[in-house]
Amino acid sequence: KNQVEQSPQSLIILEGKNCTLQCNYTVSPFSNLRWYKQDTGRGPVSLTIMTFSENTKSNGRYTATLDADTKQSSLHITASQLSDSASYICVVIPKAAGNKLTFGGGTRVLVKP
Amino acid sequence: DVKVTQSSRYLVKRTGEKVFLECVQDMDHENMFWYRQDPGLGLRLIYFSYDVKMKEKGDIPEGYSVSREKKERFSLILESASTNQTSMYLCASRQGQGNGQPQHFGDGTRLSIL
Picture 1 (cartoon, each protein chain N blue to C red):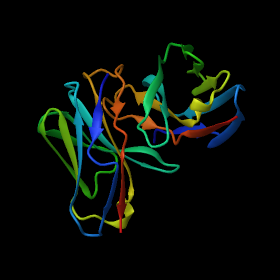
Picture 2: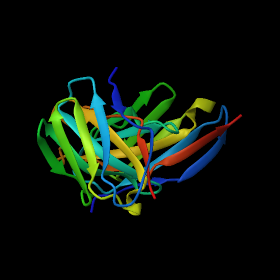
Picture 3: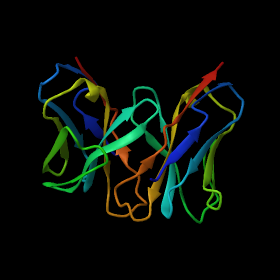
Picture 4: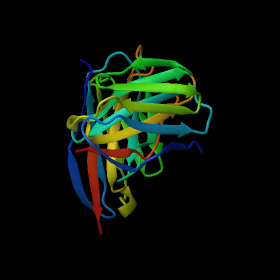
């Protein structure tokens, strides 16, 4: 069964610090991998998308990396802000899945002043 | 900007009731989806639709049905609500058939079944 595992489950960091979230997946082959940000009480919003041939993608202070050999992705948040407090969800889109995505359980990040 | 609107943010219903969750998108997207989100389990696909009157089962369709009579509207129906259907329900829409387009989510309906 295709799986996406995220770690840690939750994280507390001080404002201004960096952090890295991990995503390990078994989905293969896949067409692309996305990171979503979900604020409390809101729906997820797409942050980055990478195809299997891309190694890194940035969106402002968010940088996603992908290692297709080890089936790992990471999301790095630089100089965290209070507004970064949210859940971050890794989503892998299998190549043949069409509309069926595989979601990780998410990492809840809390940024403290 | 794409707007996906779910009719209720919070809903409380009783066991055995028939429950309707409504979702409307304003970008003429072909594809629409219903997910439920439970702590630690991630989003799980209940049903999706790729065109008007077309639907396909997702990973957990049992106890649910859907209706898509118009392109912009996708309804999730709990035929006879049970307590294990207490959850956050998220609707999403996506343009086109390729995998490159993101899904755009509504803000969710938190449903409690008593």
